[in-house]
Length: 139
Image 1 (tube, rainbow, N blue to C red):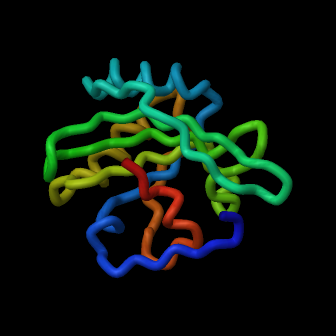
Image 2 (cartoon, helix red, strand yellow):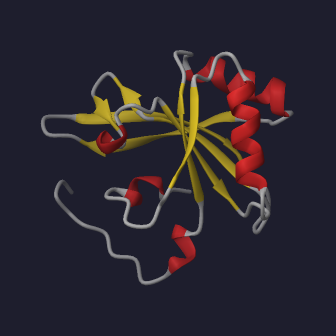
């Protein structure tokens, strides 16, 4: 329901890292590029629906889903024709949600992303205190 707030009693669902990326590429093209460059296997998984003022925005989610407690990666579009997933990060085109990563993985990944010509920026986003963090809870 619109206006409804989520409260989490456990940090279990909030234990992930978030990278914001800038790219003019379409989602399927960016997923293909990441698959080719990083030897990933991102596939279109589902859409995240977000209630906006006058409509519902839908954001594509590409996923690599490992077994429980294995590395899991989601590529999520921040922009759609109907609105933004995280308006407070309007300068970001995509997010990478990363679960169960090893120590040092995020800085190495950001360095690799910044080498790609099609990605004009990649930055770690602190999830603590993120206004709409519940939008990243799915599966």
